[in-house]
Length: 247
Image (tube, rainbow, N blue to C red; front, side, top):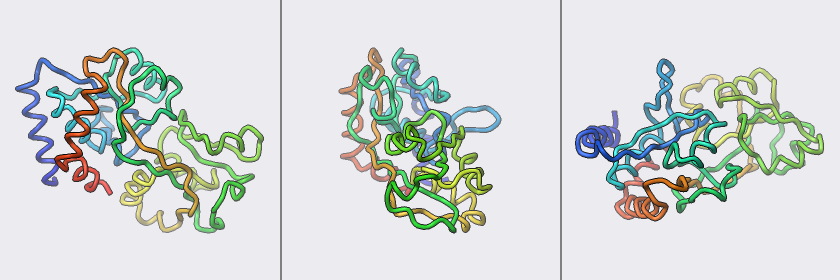
């Protein structure tokens, strides 16, 4: 266990004693893959990952105890809008159909999405290079770059519920290329080093978007408070240290 994670564990233990009356409910999507989210197979509970560590730090800055709520992708938007969770990070307004009803914090970290395929596929530099291809995606996620291709029947969308299944489908030839965040692909590589030798990352970037925290409309914790917490984590270097540990 790294020094950073020991510190985070001690913070959690402290929260349970000192801030028992103040809870911030942090939603996480079960479709987010490692290293963003690490979910225990036996319990379905969040047990680690960037969302866990970031939520712990934010809760500390807000003087609250973090309560993580694992949500299916279809529950993410209604739960944050109705206030059943206070915040959801690793988010961007472009990914939410109800973005205008939510508060949006300042940027936390950038999320770059790339294309991956089997090595035999020629390099993809532009959108025209994937015309006629089957594009692997995560069910329920938006991919604005590809919308016109799918609507015009110039490419086929292949959906999987999780990144592991999306990568398995790619390996079996059920899709030609997949869109995957760099952080998620790096984590997948560490656990699949042998099969990863058959894959390649293409020059083309699908998207490069800032991630933020969506704040529920009537949360106890205001957008201003969340922004101030992010500012403090930035100024004291904790956010930089956290992100570096995942790169």
